[in-house]
Image 1 (tube, helix red, strand yellow):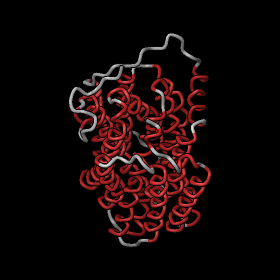
Image 2 (cartoon, one colour; image 1 turned 120 degrees about the horizontal axis):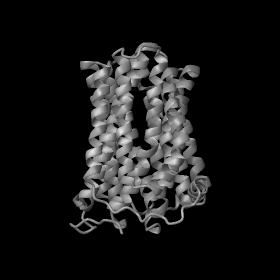
Image 3 (cartoon, helix red, strand yellow; image 1 turned 60 degrees about the vertical axis):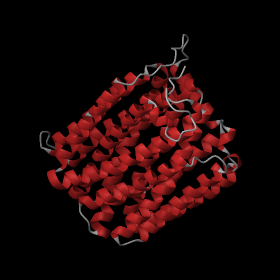
Length: 416
């Protein structure tokens, strides 16, 4: 049995927030993202300041995504088999180790080349493989099904709010106290997550008496996703959009070479897309989309690609930030739609595995996209790489609309 809220009826817009378990789950999400974003903006600033090479920024994504790919399938399996709350606490503890190691490198405790920075980033990739599946699995245990749409919107608001605040905090602390202080703050925030999960009361699913072999169990999750046209199309659409339109990974290079701002400006650019997503998430929490959900999703991703073209062509700081803000609003629709489709379509006993596959599609595409954009920037230059990526994203939308008619005609009420 899922643990349901004791308070207001589902039709209340605030119903999910009246659930103590859901509030603590939002705390888990906010503080893990804050920690991760502070590390991301600090590492990006440090590496580009030391090398001046956008390709080195792309290698940050590659160093994180390769371990993520290796661990994610097994992480999903473990989330479906082990107590999810305790697994989340262990992941949060591991998340605090990465910034500690980076702080030691920044302070000169470990002396070596720039390449040593990539080793803690690899650890981050392994830890991240657990964070998303734990969140999605606990989400379905603390909320009743009829609150999933609003819960997904509120979860997106929490996520994007942390993405707004995290880079801003990271940029400010780097400019004020240096990179080591930013890393230490990120480590402390990761430890706060353990307190949220320790106080969460949630009923875990009953253990399976006969467990399928691990690889057979992972394959079962893969067959479910690849056999579900709507879910597969939504994941693939988001993956390719982020892969080819991930211009934000080049923000340190744009700040240095095009817009001429300091680390505070980098924090603003990194936070602008998330600010747009927060605004859209608030609107969607009050006006959840049901009808024409598929068409709205397709138009939103096309708008995201168009904003990337505008960002690549802009040479004014605040205009660039404005395009990123609009891209975040489009992305906010995509995130809420994809999360809602995944929650409604996935059986409870498979949530860990399906969430891990979602992470392979979407979460890893951020890092692969960062490597792709860094490589294209080296080959074509910063501006052509970003503009080309935006046009390719719009092409992906057109292809998805053609090849996935069930997604194009989707009404979310059909999945409830």
